[in-house]
Image (cartoon, rainbow, N blue to C red):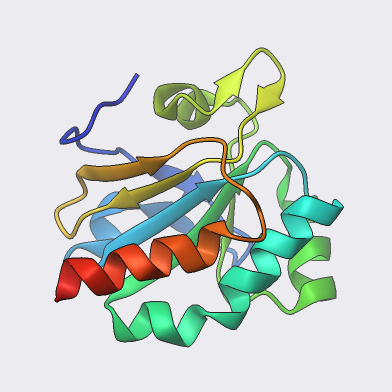
Length: 146
């Protein structure tokens, strides 16, 4: 399992049709959040709040990426239905989810990972509340910048 300071190796397909690599985001902070299932109430609440805060995250040099085991077809429906402004990554084998400590058996935990400008794990929020987590992470980034 990854620990604070470890490099997070990201190579996964996204809902935007691209394969996303950690190095694509050099110089930016990655907000990677894991969630159980597309189009479910809690996951929709969290995704829509991240969507609504996209500009604020961008102003703090951060990008948002969602991650679970759902396939790209499911991600496309979710993205389209809720006009999500960031990519959802598909980890159908659960390899990265396991490395992050977000997958236990078939259960995916609602966690959020702050990955620094060099691709290293900086902070982890474990089993968060869907409605509060995006604002909590944004507050952290504002403090970090101050």
